[in-house]
Image 1 (cartoon, rainbow over the protein chains, first blue to last red):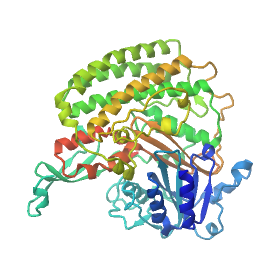
Image 2: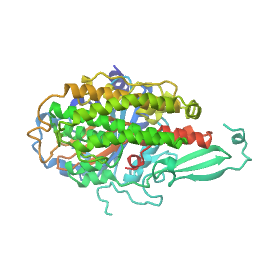
Image 3: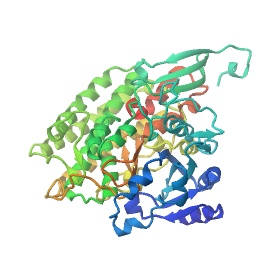
Length: 174
Length: 372
C-alpha cells in the first residue's frame, strides 16, 4: 500500500534507477537511485508518506568495482539486481550517499541512494525536512569529506574539532 | 520559557555539562548557553570515545568484528551481537537452527532486563535518589551470573556466531533463570512503591521534556523514547526477526510524551521480557546450537544488506556493503541513542537545567554506542 504510493511518487521524479528488492534477502523493499540534486525531493516524497529517517551512510566506491568483479561465481539470483557495474564508474571514481528510511505503520524500508564524483563530493542536505539528518550528515562529512550544501553546521561531530582527515576514504592512511 | 529569553539585552553565559559529569553517564559534553537557570541553547559535543568501529570492520574479517559489537552498547551487548549476525547471515544466506534462535532470544531478553535495571538505578540516581540503585544492581547481578554461565562474559558478550551460538546452556540455566524471574516479579511492586509512586519523582518527570510524535519522526527516534510518545513501534513486532513471532508479548506504549512516559515504558518492558523468556524456556526445542555446516570463512555475494533489531534503547541497524571478499567493504552501524540524543538540543531549549538532566536521563544514553 505505502510501497505503491512511494513508487508512484518516486516515478514522477524520474529516478536513475528504481527496483523493488527481495526483503528477505536484502532487508529493504525499495531501492531508488536518484540524481544528487534530487535527494531533497525524494526526502519530501517520503516525508509526505510519514517515513522516518534511520541513517545516512557514505560509501567510497574507489576500490569497489575492482574487488567486486573478482568473485565471478555469484549465485544466479544474486547476479542480476546489482547495479554497481555502471559504465561511468570506470572513468571517474565515485562516492555514494545512502539514506535508509523506515515506516512505523507498515513494514516498508526504502533506500535512497545518490552517486557523486569522488573529487568534488557535494550533495544537498535533507536536514530541513528530516532534522535527524543533521547529525548523520555531519558524521558522513567527518568520515568521507562529503559536503552537504545548505547544511547549517558541518563542523566535526565524532572526530576531533580540528580534524582535516576523512578516515573512511579507501585511500586514507593514518 | 523565561521572560528574559525574549529580551536580547539580558546577558547569557555558557557552562559545560561534562565531559566529566555523572549525569552524562560517560564522556558526553553539552555546551549550555544559560539564561540564569534556563537553558537558552544546548549543544551536545560527541566523540570523546569515538573508536571508529566502522573502519575496524573494514580491516577485519566478518567474524573478527564480532567482539567489537559488544563494545558499543555495553549494557545491551547481546542485541548488538544479534543485529550483526542477522545482517551477515542474511548476506551470506546462512540458516540458523531453531534452538540457537531460542537461546538468542532468551539471552537477549535477559540482557535487556539487565540494561533496564541499570538504567532504572542510574536514572533515579540522577534525580537524587541513591537507594534504588543498590536494589537494582542487586537484581542485575543475578542476570550477570546467569549470562556468565552460558556466555563466559559478564558485560562484553561475544556469544553469537554466524549460524548459531557458541555454547549450549547447562542444566542449571533454566532453573536459575526462572528463579530470577520469580524474584524480579516479587520486587517490581516494591520498585513501584518505592520509586514510581513517589511524589517527588512524579513532580520531576511529569510533563518534563515533551517529545511529540512528529518530532520523534523528524529525528528518527526509536525505542522507549518513541513508545513514550505514543507510537506503537517495536522492531520485534513490526519487523519480526528471529523467533519473536512465536511469543505472546505486549508492546508498552504511553501517550503522555514526557519523561514519565519513557520511564513507564521501560518499567513495563521488563515484565514483557520476562514473559518472552518464560515462553521460550517452556518451548525450547532440542537440537544443535550451531548449524553443522557453519562456514569458517564467510563469503557474502556483492551487494548491500540491511538488518535491524530492537535493542534496549531502540533500533540498532547494520548496513553492510559486501564486495564478495572475506571482510565487509563498508559496515555502517546505526545506533539508536545517536538519533535519540540529537533531539536533545531542540527539547532542552527553554528548560530549567535540573529538568534537562531529567530529560537526558530519560533518553537512556550509553555514550560508547553514540560515539562508536
